[in-house]
Image (cartoon, rainbow, N blue to C red; front, top):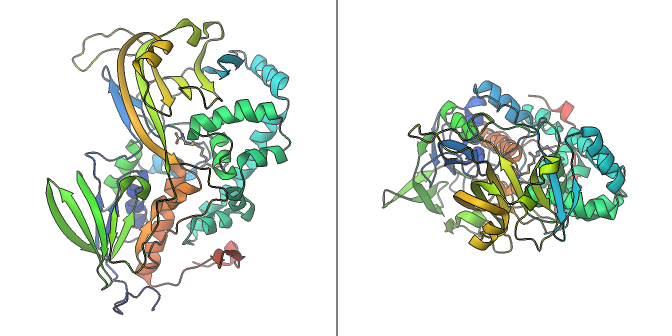
Length: 488
Ligand SMILES: CC(C)=CCC/C(C)=C/CC/C(C)=C/CSC[C@H](N)C(=O)O
């Protein structure tokens, strides 16, 4: 097999040395899926520059209780997350008290849910017509298409580009990355007011951006407002932790990969700083499981630069976690709503929402010393920039504790039509997990990408030619397969 031979003519080893850079959910899942696919041999080094597993799945402690600060929700139809939680003996977090929301436009509350579901439904119908129901049912049938990926991957089919992977779900789903969500919604004949208020509040809270994002990311954001969303007991970061533990990977924390060099002999050299020492290690295959736009890894000696990050940006979202007392005009006490969303880009916040500890729903009880603390509710405020003291004062009557997380959280989805970096950056063995994020960033998207990367590696180890259902050649999508015809 020459396809996976290197320039020096050496074929890909049966027990390769593999480096995975980034111990977020994606990197951890690559190591896990490799073992699940039966590749127990070789060395897998998992590099993480911080001191913990999890990446953008992260919690913060306030008065001895932990709160989710990064990726916080999973959809009930996300099959990988559902199955992994079962296999790894993790638990779903118990349901929180159901809480409604109010929507703010031009500093006025224009819509509130009610504790009576019927009343909420009537308010939606009154202001937005039947469009929201229609949008949710369209979203559900998009999820039907999306779910085809599970049987495709079960049959060990892999893809070199996210567009090809989306096309295997359905060509129309892939096409959603080629037009704006606004246009898609207009074609569904949704009312302008529904798009500008409710839909835009949802795209803001999930991706910090307006309905000008591409329709695939927009649809995923809408799925992120569905019923039955869930999270993992003790924090979503339990998933990458358990994945690493169940894998064969050797975890290297506080190890910052500074550069990757093409050794021109079929291997790659990684320069890593660890304990203030610079070391170089060599691998047959490298998986980059960190957004390159954020990690700023350098590349040397490649015939062509693997990926130009200059024209792409990650969106800044600041999560401010506050234990305190809201001012009356932010409480909406009459309606018992606990979240406030805005559809205005001019507002200094995008959402203010009551949050509960990751262990069990409830209020703050005691700090680490066991001392009883006052039961201050805890809120998460998302904003495009750090909040000033004055802005906090606008929202809160009393502020007891504040913790701030400044994330480069997800890509800017305003590049329409979107183009995708390849999963195979150098046409050889330098693989990139986060290219999927340019379709949409969500826990399940990382798991699907991780499975695809593990399948690409598996193919190299087994010396098989790639099996396609769809591929892009000269910018054109070629559909040339039927999943049912592919044999194991
Ligand atoms: C094709 C469609 C509409 C859905 C596919 C299923 C899927 C991947 C659903 C995920 C929905 C979801 C949990 C969205 C959250 S967006 C990012 C968010 N802010 C987060 O906390 O991760």
